Image 1 (tube, rainbow, N blue to C red):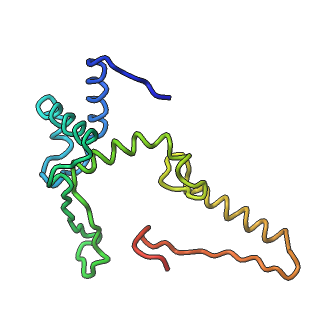
Image 2 (cartoon, one colour):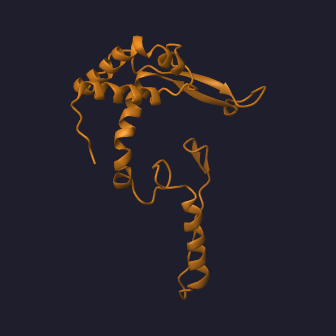
Length: 167
């Protein structure tokens, strides 16, 4: 499952590939104003420092002040917004995103074992469409298995904008 690599040149190549994949050229700029395109273009200049800082974080578990800062920008969803609901908050962050991506990448193979089988989104190996199949099977069960006085019930919750509210 794991590959132990000690060859310094191979490690450097792996880290360069990892960070270049992490910094897709189309990503928006972070709070420092630098886009991922900047990091890709000047990787020879900034790459070693960035890798060292990430490695130092994982060794010490200490994040230098300011590296966890995030700028929140309200981007309008419509041409002439009049209410707060017509804006989408976008978080611009750099270092925290790098650390999160590294952790997410490392934990990805363990997600199926750590996340309940009942959760069908954000796992990478399950699809939200699986819920449609489950609902169909439950309705089929309700239709074909009448149990005397026992009533079956199905509850549908409307998850508006994922985490903003539950009606």
